[in-house]
Length: 137
Image 1 (cartoon, rainbow, N blue to C red):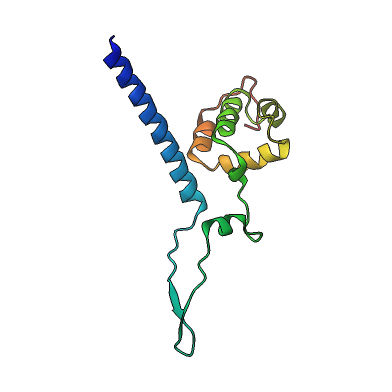
Image 2 (cartoon, rainbow, N blue to C red; image 1 turned 60 degrees about the vertical axis):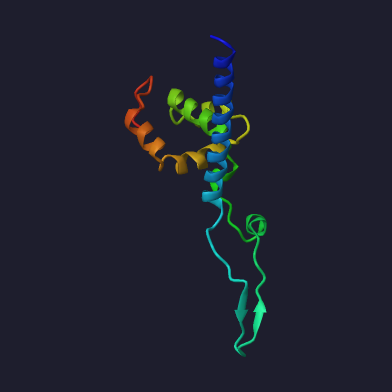
């Protein structure tokens, strides 16, 4: 393998990293930001035109009236650790907490009940086989 090969491998890795970042940012944007178009001007009842104050994305995200979603505070790494620990230990939330030290048991349980509605949760439910059979699984 010559220098051209290594240059191609580095270029591909750089492209892959850039694509992963792009995909992640797009995913977060699609989840968190409404797709709303605002007009520049509006008419009052008297027929006069005036400039409408345009809400900003940052304003919408930090608004005190915005309800935060459970999964917003979970990083992709934390979700991957959660899924890996769940695959090994099932719904033993105290054991899961040993792996996900950045989250409380309450946060892990809240996340589980949202996560189980996803395709990953359904797949886990169909395929999980506990080491010790337990009726609660």
